[in-house]
Length: 221
Image (cartoon, rainbow, N blue to C red; front, side, top):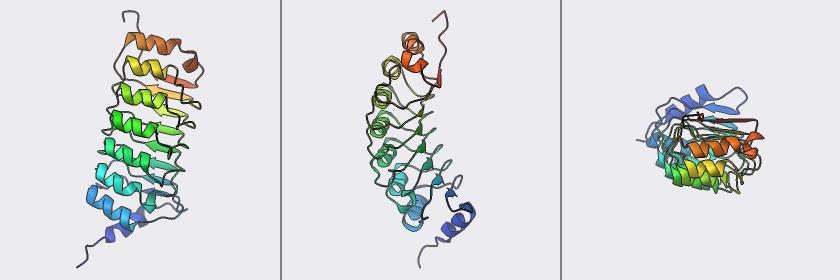
């Protein structure tokens, strides 16, 4: 007997907005098996906003989603509070479906340098305007790649709070040579390096942004 996937119809009926542009699949305890079934069996034409946050999605599950029809027309993708690591981030970066994505939320996952580098180098994400990578495991290599990205030319808002960012990345982010459209940079609760913080406070580039949030540099530092 075929496996019962009637729950997919129930989730779709309950989660879809009246205009059919937004689908809420958050807080469904979605794991790899459910991710595979959803990727294979759910299609919502012209879907623009997808909430998949606060689930149990791991890299394998996200790899299935990344090439599914469900992702094809998305402008916003909310994936915070899952179990996504570097391979999941790479799957997003290499997806052929996310060329129209404008907003990507990945905070509170397990993404490290390799995942951040993949996102920074992704031609697929060239239209991204907001990227939230707060509360992950990104160190200097990943943050430098983001600061120097030649692909994220349209990125306006970058969240890097609560990662493992130190002096090298602070130096790169004080100039952000690749992020030509950047207007907002948030990077609180990282490795406090007084010299790096001073570079950021003195940066003409950052002073010209709309908003910058870093850890505070105090006199005793």
